[in-house]
Length: 135
Ligand code: HEM
Image (cartoon, rainbow, N blue to C red; front, side, top):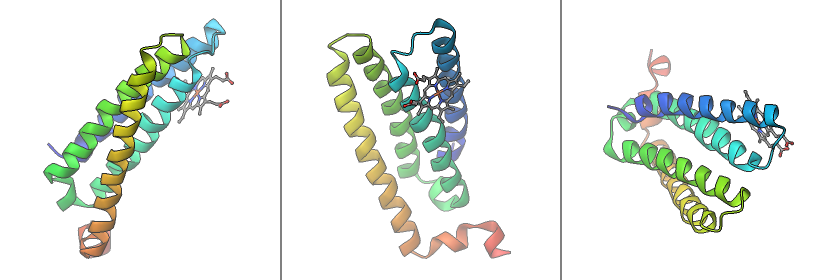
């Protein structure tokens, strides 16, 4: 199991849920949970898919445990954050601490991803890991 092989299907699943959510909002004419829909789509679909692309371009990193943990934390924290925001938008007070904690986890996980991106460049593995560049 690699980080990218987890990221891609999870991103597509979140896109499907996010789009279904969008269609529901449009049909019901109730856009109150729009911020949760937007965060699910942007963190869960767009960002996660881009994270997966980066890992796929760097096979050594892709197979590492730290990348798998980073992708796994991103998936779980994004799902929890989406629920938290949806709860806030529907008037549940419990949503606030859920969104607060999970957003900090997503933020910390982005710092970890940034560290992996920078570390990968500095170690000089970036180009060597790209099959097209090596050929
Ligand atoms: C079947 C696909 C989708 C449907 C039917 C849909 C539907 C909607 C609806 C009804 C709103 C509320 C608009 C408003 O109240 O002003 C909305 C907002 C939003 N959606 Fe989607 N959406 C879809 C896919 C996506 C995707 C793929 C993304 C991101 C990659 C996305 C990002 C956003 C954002 C950022 C907002 C907030 C826009 C704003 O601040 O005005 N949506 N969407």
